[in-house]
Length: 390
Ligand SMILES: *Cc1c(COP(=O)(O)O)cnc(C)c1O
Image (cartoon, rainbow, N blue to C red; front, side, top):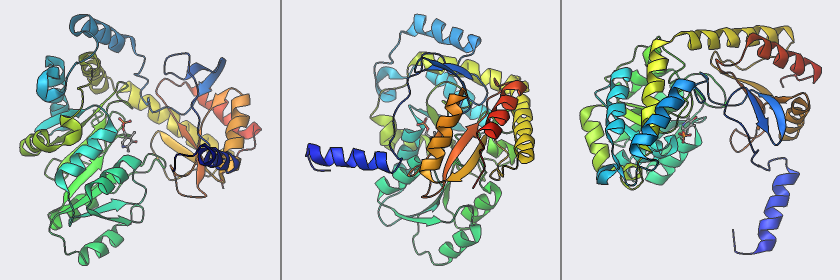
């Protein structure tokens, strides 16, 4: 984009005309199903706070107590003097929880993905990536200068095929665990097998499975019984099901030591506030000890899927808290989202380039803080607004 105000204006006009314009909404309340946004009350179905922990009193208390003790800012990168005892303990607890030797904190999931891929891959290497991977994995691959080969979503015979022509010695397979805009899951067992066969790195990004899947909430890899041997690199975020902020990479002791020496998004950035680490430790305990949130979330998902079926709405093949309704055109998705807003429901339209062209959708997400009545109200509104999947 050249430095010419006319060009900026034309760009923005074009985005508006194609119904792809993006704008923030201003929230005046905590993250929870009932929120005040732009001065109006809404029942929301669009957050990633799947267990309803973003505004949990015990976690807030830990955050307050830790900020009294440690202050607000960490003041420095982890390798200078920003790494507090709270960060250290959180890393140890994350390693234990996920059944990995070590874990390393990053300030965001985006940075974790950029950091780990760029530490391991360079020009001449090859990255095999699912076509529906999250933007942060795409950017991580592009930045590394490795060659990226994207295979059709979950099409592992195509992945096998690409490997049969591969000549690179250092390869990596990159995949979301739970796909963020579709809600379905990767075939992680098969991916682990292919990675082992080719001595490839395998990264599973479990941003949406961590806290919500698995017997104790350790995520998709716990649910599928995959160890560090099977999946050498696990990435997960703390700002979704865990309800706080940040992310981590978990794997072998050597992998983590290597990342500490080389991952630029770990080295050259300020550590997350210690109080966030302390609050996250409390959240982890609740996630591990209290199964009822996952049980309730699953009951709400089931209720929604059954209700949608009765309304003749075909949902996408997802069993997770992400239940998108495929619409197709961005214009229609935006207008349906606005209709729902008039009924008091906030459910955002997800449009390209977040999703492929002509696959705009209403991405419904559930939280353990929703009630059965909330889901029933959503279903009523979908019916009143004549919402059908494409
Ligand atoms: C949200 C998300 C990220 C980024 O995590 P942040 O902590 O929000 O930066 C990475 N990967 C996936 C699959 C995500 O959904």
